[in-house]
Length: 54
Image: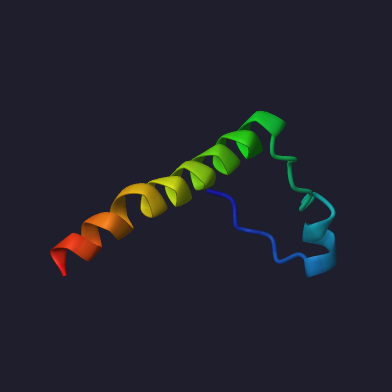
């Protein structure tokens, strides 16, 4: 088994790129729809049920 090389951080960093990927529009749309639906559910069902329960 070969010994690991002890290169400098600059030498190691030339092979790494930390670019992120863009989130597709349909994934963003899905999350927006989810949050809107969650807020609607809480307002429409959870608050009225909590009033009756408490």
